Length: 269
Image (cartoon, rainbow, N blue to C red):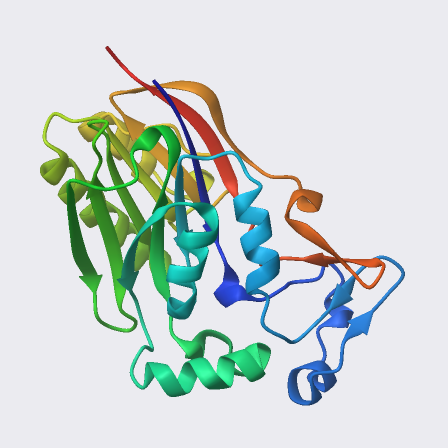
């Protein structure tokens, strides 16, 4: 059985134009759209654009990070998926933060609060048999891993590691050790925003040696989908920039500061 998997950091549901000159204080404070010859930068809620991009993509498992918590239910419903949400940092007074973020997402930024969201549909089996949540750390920011065991026998773990490389190394190692322990002999996918580049760390070699987890996306990528007990049908690769762009007022709106990474895997017999 083949399973399509994507991982995507949603940048708290905001756009990120390729021209940094479009990201202005005028837009951030006054919510004025900025544009050049090809792209537009907006400061409004973009759940419709993110939903359309995700719904139109080919996947059975979607591992999302920096997802606004208020998006979990509508995203899952639109994609015909079940959802497992793991809250991360800055989620106190969530209702108030959500109101402010709908009005001015760029001004609030990550202060709306975040989550790791796992969406399941298609061949993966929508309804997990088991879900667990692991707090990787609470300081300086809360970081978590969401774990699910699927009816297909596959286990899936979704994490967002710290931005500081030494802390990220600890986070990913802890997540891998725990996910492997929880999965037992079952095939496992460990994916998300690791905030680690294989060219700058030996951790990926350690994960392959100790747990059979491989293969990272590329030497300079920080978003990875590692598999154990799985055959790689299509190796993990980042989407081209245009694949995460939406049409807006005759121009292009680029979603997130991360490109989704996609792979296709098969459970080994």
